[in-house]
Length: 178
Image (cartoon, rainbow, N blue to C red; front, top):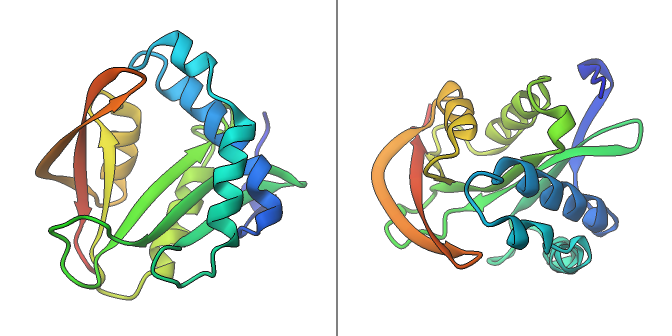
């Protein structure tokens, strides 16, 4: 896949983007988590099921207590990736702390600068000085390296989540307000 960053558009997602976001979500999980999750679980991920969830998220009024912001990165009408963020849902979050809920790219777009531009847009979208957190799977070294390059670092908080019948440790990363 050739990605010319000058032709990549990052924009707010609409409900019409749900199916394309879901496809990216599933494809990215299948590649990124191949070493962390069971192959049968990954193979059974259904873009149509995810599309329904994304349609619901994207139909919720932006700015409401349950909705965040969703951005898509696209080139020539093809969705390359997306990011979802909003106020942190963590129990210990200080008021005004933001959270990156999800950021995924088509595997063919990895390492081509799309994620960097998506992250820059996310960070420019939150209030100046706001803290941002995210959760990343322990063992997802590629993602951890990417987040560190953007000023996020583990803050020592961990949680165990069961995905596909496998207990996995998630690490919270925090980026201090600038």
